[in-house]
Image 1 (cartoon, rainbow, N blue to C red):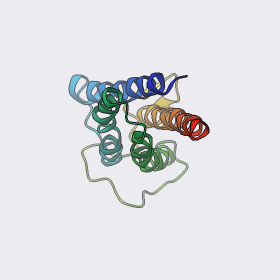
Image 2 (cartoon, one colour):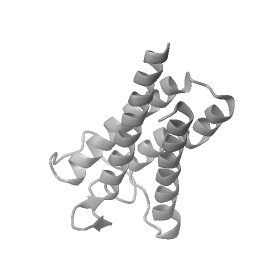
Image 3 (spheres, rainbow, N blue to C red):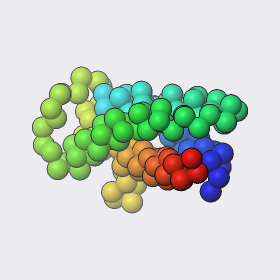
Image 4 (cartoon, helix red, strand yellow):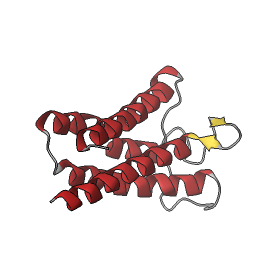
Length: 139
């Protein structure tokens, strides 16, 4: 996979996550919980900075992408621990209309919005780390 193709893959993941989250909140009218908002804070900028990096062929962008993916993944992991009731009490209580462990949408009996978010963050982190490793070999 070339560097540019890897960025296109990352961009497609980020766009899917942004469009998916907006679909749930704006079309299906499911208000996001507090943890969903934090995950959006880390995902949404990627849909803007990745195409800029593609246009400029900026190879340093991987550091910025990773700087957003790591905290986003941590929040998504914590959200999953609450959602699947591995942790009973949140460290910080959710104050939004929807509790953070709400099971408003769950596909196939297990696939909830928090797991979809975590999957996007982890997949993007895998592609980013692969590209970083590949870039390190070429320099």
